[in-house]
Length: 157
Image (tube, rainbow, N blue to C red; front, side, top):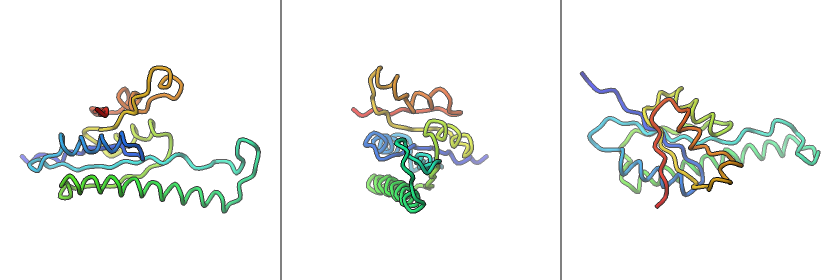
């Protein structure tokens, strides 16, 4: 009986921590002998829902379009950097898929894990202290509790 392809999802953003997690994943979880697919997930922040900012200024459609264009360029830049790390670690032979979603990162990561039936989720940790984590929340803590697969949180040394 042939083994099914194992899907490893790595959540990437523009942080060094997420790129370190990707490097760790490639060095420790991906091997040439196993059938594995690498899912690179980047979550863009939600678009401006309202044409007003917090100070009450009106954004023109051109400004909103420019913000959305910048968001897509940033997402592509993050993915290009992640793919370069894969090439530099001689992982160019593995099956790789770019996944770009939009929304609140912690919820989108958990729902995408389930939607794409990922076997493992790998993500970096920003290493916030107690107070900062309490105020800002922790995406990795949320995903560790709510993702429907094993979660590996990689801390930088």
